[in-house]
Image (cartoon, rainbow over all chains, first blue to last red; front, side, top):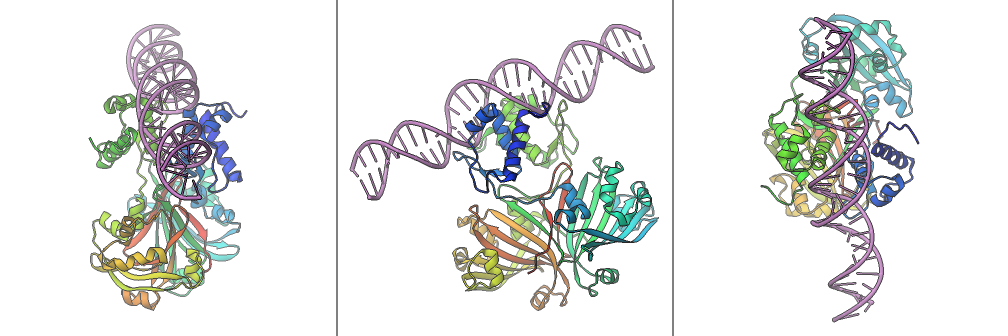
Length: 252
Length: 252
DNA sequence: AAATGGCACTTGTTTGAACAAGTTTGCCTA
DNA sequence: TAGGCAAACTTGTTCAAACAAGTGCCATTT
């Protein structure tokens, strides 16, 4: 018996999730029928169905009426942290993240940054320019702007020392929501020099606005990846819509 | 009354989804309590909760125990069809999709296509090269390869006439899952000529493998967008993970 | 006036039951 | 043997009831 605080249906989902992750049932395998799960978990069918519904909504299992549920083809996804933090991402694929901080400055926001962070133009922001490395080679150049309130914490942090995202969360900053826009851009002089490509080379750009649960904007970043080193992938099915959208570009 | 085939809880979710989309309740507004919804829909609480659970899993509503559900901050996403079909996407943003088919041919698969479609190298595939337009101007160049079985249907379709995706679905082709990889690439000669950019200009590339529910690969496409005209966006929160992943590039 | 206690209301969890609808299996017939 | 039909099983939908647990408000008390 685990923590008695956990409701029965959640204990069931956790158990099933773990079993699937552990490979007890492989992709396409048939799970025990609802009746069997009822017996094994000593629960009513409603409870079991509640648990299965949760897994279904996560896309972990599939199956239609009359047929027992099967383990679905996994739709890969990354946790919020892994997707938001370069350091965490690198770790997750077995590489070591590195960084060379080129600039850390406080200055008035220009028009673009002010708009993205919903500040008055000229309000003070903290900007950081970092070259990010994967196993020692340049992979991405990030230009990030923080609101004054959050950014001031960075002056007490060695930006060559790891994950800003992680550090800010430890400091209690409520980084809750990320809105990402992905496009392609030609390398400018700075990109070319630091990433080691020729001027005008195609780069994969991710612009990101991070906000608190309250909706207050905290960070705006323009990250440019070498397309040879990083891609974005997404999967969707006619049953399991992805939250990715293709949108019309907005002039910048 | 609509189609009586639709179960009650689904009618309820549909209704609520529409009301929310229509702005009857705004972000942060309180929805009717479960009891009220029971009365209004003439349904039991279980049914109402089933409907609410569905909306909750889509991230449309939030709210904790004791508090009535509220309309959550919208995480934008697109339906499977809208994301898979250029024509449908254009329609959704109020533009007209156009196309100029440059080639429709049957030929042996090269190594890349064969690998993506899980065919023997040299197996026959149907390839189509189409320039896609938004309101008349070039926006994307698509190079798509279909397995023989699916592709043969295209010879009875006027490819200048609209959505291949829609046509194939009407013909009963089971287009179920899309796996998308997004990166940036330099325009080659053909891209430059048809899209009207200079050689080497950055393009936003989406490579896509579409498969049937059975897992059989049906289509591989390399779509190159003018980054001025289309982006991809995604949102995630620490509670609502997105299915997007940043991955290490695989050599092509 | 401020703190507290309780009541009314809300959602969360669980059970049991019944019928509908799709799938599989195996037997029986042609 | 091939086909078809029916029974047995599966999941899907819906209802009703009960208690647990969290929230908000109001009246009473300090």
